[in-house]
Image (tube, rainbow, N blue to C red; front, side, top):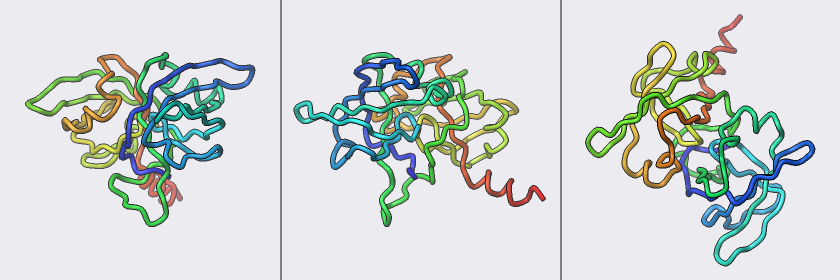
Length: 199
């Protein structure tokens, strides 16, 4: 379980296809503190399991094995060596929930169709698949590349969010451009409400 509050960005070192998985190697710093093999780390909002750790000066080199399904359904497939990714360690029991509950299970990919600066802030419009849009509500929460954000406007096949300077500066959003794919996870509360009211 995560909160959608990004702790840092990591850098992709390499991507190595294997017979039944993709080996993703990242260099990380803050989120490497106390990290062990078998721990979970949210990478662009995807809950991944650490399979190998090595030290690199003050940084850590961490490896993950992604199933082909995870690779094909997330924007990690578009990463290259040098790409930045958003990182968050799992929520500790008793820890502060500054964002909203994020599971790390991506519902689908969206596409940036508008990305403009308005004053000091930025306005971002995303198209999303129907299975995500059904849970998007005005002033509700959504995780975009693992970032907990508030929906400012909802249209038929898209939604708009505002990005404050701090969020832009400390996340991988600064590398995103028009047409870029973003990982989306809808708020789990809407999913539970739908399930409970289905019958």
